[in-house]
Length: 216
Image 1: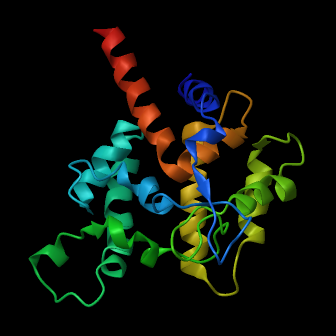
Image 2: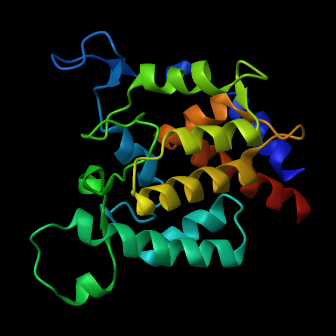
């Protein structure tokens, strides 16, 4: 039931959720120009909007979208451990360092390899790379990925000996699939689109709160 609800919710997202623009580097390819798209993706987890995501905020964010306690706890530790130092270059070791804060404005610095390429090196959304996912891997349904198709994509994206990138990509996509697949086991295109700018996270939280309110 949870997966179906999230899938139905994601279907309400449209391409208007992404404002696309161009620059001299990528003319015609469609990049988010108004704000860094990768920042939008992670901003949901900045629960107090101070520009820094601490492990407890990552935990709260995962719980807010319906993830289990253990998954949320593990994600909070591993994600912040992996991203904190990369988003705080040149800063001296301090108590704040031990708190594993992730700076939203520098999130593009923590971009890992073996990914889909939908975010460029500056954290912008590259629409043609997004469409390429489905052109290459959605063999069964034009607007969705099956579990096997998702695994094929992950395998194709692997860079040689980039083991950290392999693990990071696998963890991200499998978590998304398990949380958001529909009753037929499909991960819909609009669901994935919503993840890239964080809008799906916001809708998932609203739906979870609404469902909790109905139970009272």
